[in-house]
Structure formats: structure tokens, C-alpha cells
Length: 277
Image (cartoon, rainbow, N blue to C red; front, side, top):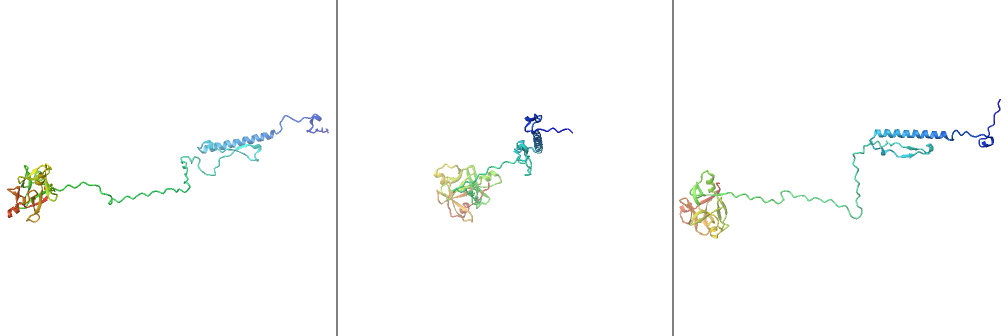
């Protein structure tokens, strides 16, 4: 049986000439294990990142920041944590939602917030001031004889006659006048024609004439209504010739002094009726 050769202590190789095996560096197995673990960790992180990018359109910058493993990880290796899915939010769901505007805090202090002003209610339409409306045109006036009810005053060749009025528009317009306050006395009346002229007496005959603005014209064109013997009729007395009234003689209108006769009272009685034109 071969004798076992005593192995000199390894801590004193120089005494026996024995030297340790230097072909393998000490701790090589640990380094391999650490490298393999690091490679496995990196592979897992890369796989997790790839899966996360495929399932979400979010940019890659949302990946979790690297964290250092605790004391359980050998060699203090660096690992990458996978994104947490506990919130349950759909990736990219926050896109398209506008960011809330920063809230402005109410100022503190003695000054209070301004109260909203109440609008003054508009008044109802019935109480609002009415707009000025155009004054309706005064209907024309025609003058009919009491003694000859089928005849009316009509302007013919500048003078006024008592004529029957036919259906023609021209005749009816010539027999229609605009009754206005008297030019010389507002309590009396003046009669204007369609062309802006007035009826006046000249030489005690009733004619059509243009207003020349003179006091004489205003007096000649002003007549005051007086009660007539016939119901609803009037007699027209001259302003500048009191006691003279308009009457028809031979169907022509004249200004004659008053007479105490039935014929005069009948010929000087007229009714003011609605205009024919």
C-alpha cells in the first residue's frame, strides 16, 4: 500500500515547495453566477419593456426608472421595475382630455367677492313710450245743398258752382275739399282744394285762389258756421263781412246779405258730408 504523501499546509507553500493552482482565479464561480443572474434580469426587463410597448402607444419615456434591488440581490445588481397596472387605466386614455385649468383661489382679506348685478327688468310693451305715428289724413269734406240735395259744391273753371256730381273721379275730386281751421280765425273754417288752393270770395263771388299770405286773403277765405233752419245744416258767414252768408243763386255760390225769406234760408243752408273723392 502506497504511503500517502503528506500535503504540506497550504498557508506555507514555501516550506515544502508546494504552490497553489493558479490556473483558475479565485471567485470565478461567483462571477459567473452573478453574470448569469444579471443577464437573466436584463433579458426579463427587455422582454417586459417590449410587451409594454406593444400593448400601449405611449412613448417609451414612461418606462419605470431603474431601481436598486435590496440586499437579497447578489452583488448589488440594478433591476428595472415593470409598469404597474393596478390602476386599470387604459394606456393612452389620457390623450385627448384637456388639462384642467389652474384654479384661481379667491382673494383673502376684508374685500369680499363682487356680487352679481341683477339686470333691470324691461318694462312691458304697454308702458313703453309710444313711437310717434303718422297722423291719419283727414277725410275730405263735401258740401251738399239743402234745397237741392242732389247737388254739391264743385270747382269749375276757377269758380264754385252747385252741380250734380257724376261717377267720374275728376268730378268727385273737384267736389271734395279739406276743411281746416280758419286762416283768419281758428274757431271758423277754411276750405282747401286738392291742389293746395283755397276757396275765397272775390267781388262777393266764391272762387278758387292761391294763398298770397296777405291778411285780406286769409279773411276772404274764412267762414264761420252758424245754425241753419234745417236740422243738421249750417250757414257760412263771412269773417270780414259779418251779416253776409254764402248762398247759391242760379247754382253759383255768392256772398249775399241775410234776408228774412224762406228762399234765402233754403239757398244758404248746406250740409257738410263725407268727401266724394
